[in-house]
Length: 238
Image 1 (cartoon, rainbow, N blue to C red):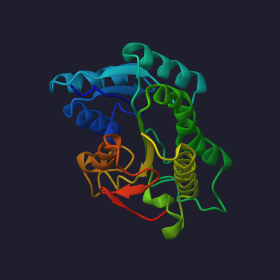
Image 2 (image 1 turned 180 degrees about the horizontal axis):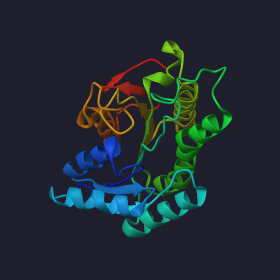
Image 3 (image 1 turned 90 degrees about the vertical axis):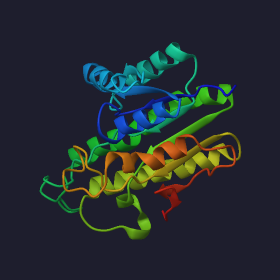
Image 4 (image 1 turned 45 degrees about the vertical axis):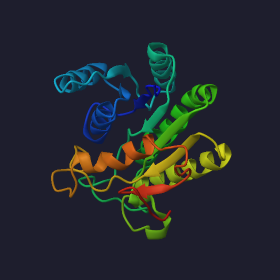
């Protein structure tokens, strides 16, 4: 009998994160909703319970190092393992409606807050979860990035967000190189422009479409890729 995998998803009480939890649960994986606000996480779990799924919930604020330590410890205590980590929580503080800042005008607090959530949070999550994966000899880490972080297609505007996602991609590549061949894999993905609170109502994609590649990377076979960047299950350039 195959082992039941345990997946921890950050920022999972809504949007793409919630849909990732839903899709993982439907595959028979036990998902854990990581939510900055515990009550919001519980409401999301109740929503999924009405669909026949049973996700766990832990309070987890990726902006708070102690919350990361506590949230990972609680998740580990619930199931004795964490097999999958999906770094989904993110912010776009200089996105639409923010006055369209440029490199010349973007405020330092915006850059610092964006990097705290989009880069340092995932780094600390990885540092907390990776030893557990190594102890079990298995792991799948998925970093939810963006095409706006591609150096090969870098454009103007949204500098804090673009720089943070480029840094998240660098984190992905660095860790993949350090891990080397083996059964712990780390990859980045771009969900595209998705109809969520962040993406807005004019976005082109549904949460279901946005979550699909993350779920695929979270459930890779042993022969699957390591250190790649994907959209719609296909490699894209860095």
